[in-house]
Length: 231
Length: 231
DNA sequence: ACAAAAAAGTGACAAATGTCATTTTTTTAA
DNA sequence: TTAAAAAAATGACATTTGTCACTTTTTTGT
Image 1 (cartoon, each protein chain N blue to C red):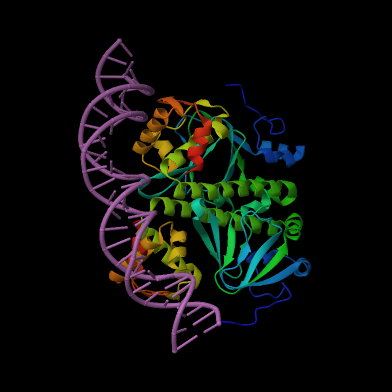
Image 2: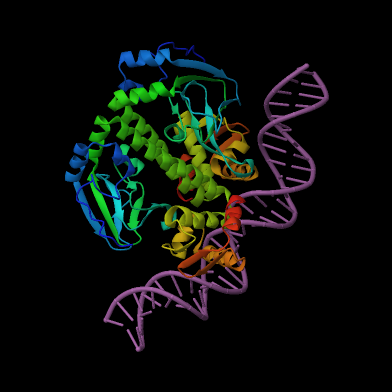
């Protein structure tokens, strides 16, 4: 899995943001010039809630978690970030501050591109601007369904959601190493870590999954989907 | 309150969307030509989840509620809509479908402007495009804080939030007629209507508010804010 | 003005879920 | 390799919140 992903040119980068396809080679060269790369060890802060949104961030390799810092130091993980995804919160076009924190879950390589350059491209390239709006809209839509799930589903449904998300969206496989620990899985599904442990055990008892600590295998996806659907 | 608000020209409309200030008179004339007005009685559907997003909607007068249709026919009211606000969900730049339903709470006059015209203006006017992005971002940000409040605050904190929102954002007054009934107040704060009634009573007993049915007066805003802050 | 419908209000109870204290297992670092 | 730290697991218990069945009050339409 660990190929040398370092690319010095956004024109040929294999892990670039999809919306970059709307840019000309000249535009991509401009971005390449204003690009800074940084490497993070697991658990490090990539950007912190409250800090200025001077750059758009793009993951080149590894995995990160984006989370809201809620009440009483309780976090809400709103999404996991994979290579190819653009990360820039709603503060970018508002108070210019981050409203969630991004930390690395694994070794992470990230590109930072000056927000001024991105904004300049919005002004000169309509398709790029619309691509950005589509990206923001898709994330906004995700929040709608997250709100429904977290407020209306019971715990088993929410945990099933999380497992299906990891299987279908993140790993594209029915067997995977959980990058999230029980605490984080709780922050992702809005429940106490003890509840995560209990429901995980129930799912194992019901032969829906098998798991030993960080490794999970989905044995009965139909049933897991049913648990998700029924709330 | 009932002035003749009908305006046939977006150039001089007093209740137009703030972002229209970035448009030229010619652009506004174009919009005026592609504008359709509709009047709704209280409780009517302005647009329904799942229907095509062919137009952007702008409230000229009255009040509406935007709500997600969740599980088991339970709704989540995500925002109240006042004159001057633009309503077009995240589906507009995605699957071209509405993802929430908008219904009138009072008599409502609304303008429908063809989405193609809006999109065309995005392509020709950078400031207008950025204004739209800012609008979408602000709504997205609101959802973040709504997610935190609904999942992490206890019921009294959530109800305090709702009352402060009505007082500060919607009515700009400490005394107002609740446009939402107890059921809807529950859909806005993620609780059963019985719980709304109980907590409203507690707030009255604690001399934080006085209320008889639909009329509410905030007696001790500091205390109400404290309840909101403490979750 | 009055009957019907809708909304508000009440109380008992049950279900869902968090908290805390503690033990066991796994991971990490010297 | 081994001790220390972190994470996982467990069980008892408390709290929050929803549900249900019902009564009372308010609103609505004729």
